[in-house]
Image 1 (cartoon, protein in one colour):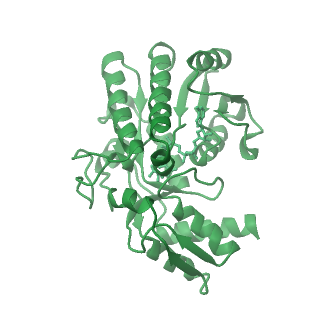
Image 2 (cartoon, protein in one colour; image 1 turned 90 degrees about the vertical axis):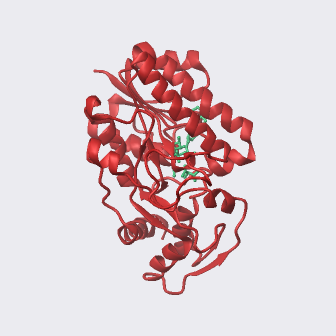
Length: 313
Ligand code: NAD
Ligand code: AKB
């Protein structure tokens, strides 16, 4: 049986994607890997401690496990990237090129996520189209845009079947986020339950595109299972589920926690958020592989609170 390798499996997305892939394809067929030791949730299946920057070790893991598909998720996200731009550029670019080069002759399908961070201050902010002005101004966004160009290049030049989508901010309760600008939308739930108060690093009216984790995981697996001839976009697909601001999510949480308090102290992440779209047009993904989200702000908030209350209280 051919196997799946998840790189960056201990992260916010990797943890949940690994669990779902193991549900669907069998625990023994999904090899989780990360720079760090396995997190508890994915400890019950095959695991390799792997630095994706080390191409010979990547090749070794692929051979040892007879890997046929790769989900390459390791990256440094927007806020952490601004604190160490050279490290972010190096990891985000070299790791992708290592995976694409390896994929040229041995891997049947590769998944690599892009982000709404590919857009910048010159981009139309409302219902941002699939193809438009980009001009990102964070190192993370620049690396994701360059990554998209590499994916399309490897598809056209070498017929590597690499697939990608531009996630908005992802919100889930199983794993904490790792250094992005949209992290507030996860942190706020923990603080509402544990402290009944939250200090937000964005202004109250900062509208950003967001998505509940179940939708993101479903989108990822659906895209990977889509008929390759139906996929017209080989850079990265826009996808969208909901848009909200800190004030909007705060009000939604207050429906269950009426005494919940919020204070706003914007920091350097405000500038990053201001350069990203308010909302995303995802018609191409809907048309090519039937994308459609299931969670809006109300349903996502209820699901987050229900699950975190069990986990934290
Ligand atoms: P994360 O920071 O939570 O996880 C990244 C994982 O990569 C970490 O577990 C880290 O240990 C691992 N890693 C770092 N360097 C590595 C290396 N050299 N070798 C192997 N593993 C290494 O990130 P995430 O939120 O899970 O994001 C996953 C992917 O999805 C990233 O490419 C990110 O850009 C993209 N994305 C995420 C979001 C989001 O909101 N979470 C939104 C848009 C795009
Ligand atoms: C971040 O905020 O950096 C990520 C992203 C939208 O790519 N969540």
